Amino acid sequence: MKYLTQKSFLQNEIPGKVYDCFITSLKPAFKTIRWLLSIMIPVSFAVMLLDYSGFLFWLAGYTGPFVNLLGLRGESALVLLSSGLLNIYSAVATIQSISFTGREITILALMCLISHNLIVETAVQKRTGSSALWMVLLRILAAIAGGFLLNYLLPGEPYSGSDKVLQHIPVPFIAIFKPWLGSTIWLITKAIFIIIGLNFLQRLMDEFSITLLLSNIMSPVLKLFGLPSQASFMWLIANIIGLAWGSAILIEQSEQGKISRQEANLLNHHIAISHSLLEDTLMFVAIGVSAGWIIFPRLFLAFISVWTFRIIFIKKLS
Image 1 (spheres, rainbow, N blue to C red):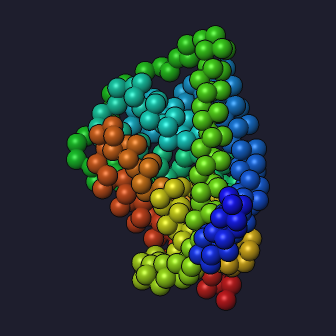
Image 2: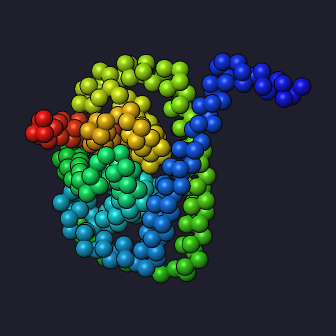
Image 3: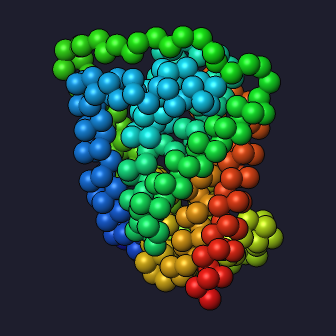
């Protein structure tokens, strides 16, 4: 009886389609999970070793004078380095360990939101049709431009005190390895649930023509940003979930030809600068940063990035 009930349930049109969408989403999801974790885990382990060795502190000492030009103290370089190599969580943790002013935190927040997790997210963008070197340069230049912009616009005086000498305090290896291991286990768990869920959602939306409806609704917004309407779903995923977790959708849509290589490259020029407008923004709002100062400059710089690329490069190729 149980078998017959299950069989009749699956033969029903809508539940059957939902079931098929879930089953067909598993293989590409696990393929992406395996690929993504093969990058994320070694990178995070390498950064953990660099932190343990004191290399990041040494490097921050040389980059400190540059951040002074952005109205930041020398210790800010450590925040930018940890964010660029890892993620927003490491940036927030480093910020909270140093006594920055609210003005400095806002500038750092914008720069980190633009140029974090560069290794992993650049690998995703390379898989979806963009030059890895150019994506890294674009994000670093946009982060610097954003830093200069906020240093000019924000009320209050830029930091002008004397910088402390950054010192690395040695700790036992196990003391840094255990937190890394715990965060890695959590990373794997999140990757499985989020990427399978996104793949399943994307197939459901395609099956029931929701993706087409979404493209029509979002078309005016994307047109303003210089992006194709076909990129609507990927644009939303990148801005809600982020590049790393949304990679399953971005890669699959690109590799299946649902968006051309040139269109994917245009999208990458936007989401390289402005993505994860929800979760990552809230991380900084939670420590006192005003959301407006770290959302609108990203959207503005993304707008400039796409239209500059369209006017200069695409027109030259056409």
